[in-house]
Image (cartoon, rainbow, N blue to C red; front, side, top):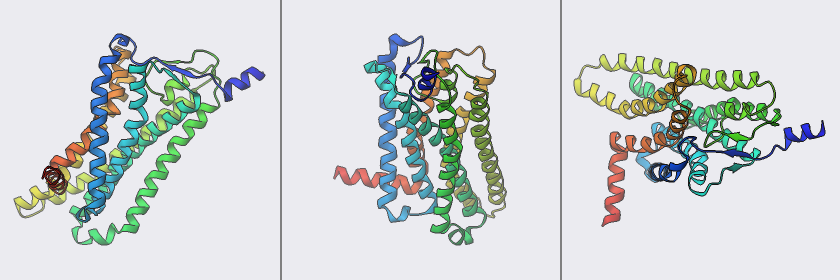
Length: 314
């Protein structure tokens, strides 16, 4: 009984094997991952710098965009450095506490990303459907309340995952067939009933994300109705242009999310190697593409980026 209790509170380190079936290619697979990660960090840091120093970008939309950039940095940094250490250094061990910490920040940043996209959709709804009341509705105080609210909501959703894992005994294998720790994958290593972990770890975050998607869809339904009632074609194009970058980011975030969910649920013929590769790409590609999309499609940011680098050249 003493040994059993110790196995609960002080389990042995876990071993993450990386991408099974492609171990001989780990060194080469790590190169594009490293390049994309550097792009993600660099792009999001430039975005945060511009929003911080340029007064013209001190608007609600760009405040939410800075939140998205910070969350993307957390999402990619929580997973990619450890993945690269597995690929290049063979550092497969991770302590139980380290595993819990990585799992929390990965899941937390994912749920928070979804909530931020919902808040950005609300911002676009107010800006297009009630433009004259935009400043009075989205005051700095309201924006801070929204930011704190969605951050606290994400924290409360993911924190129980940590406690659900700490209650489990790990007396069988400690080998994780993945490159990072995720809730259900770690729970499946336990020698105990994990039905609560499965129900909570799957249903609650997914239902939260689905509710965010529904609210985003409702916001854009109202936005489209308002846009198509505008008298001028140029005004309609300008209004849709302000939403273009946000729609691209939404598609980049939710399309692989639901594809992964459906693949896990119905894709029994999909190889485990594909699942792991896709999961790794998912935590690095959207954070790398988001600042590029906003830099290309948002005129204010595009102009500031050009000015920033042209100043450095001179």
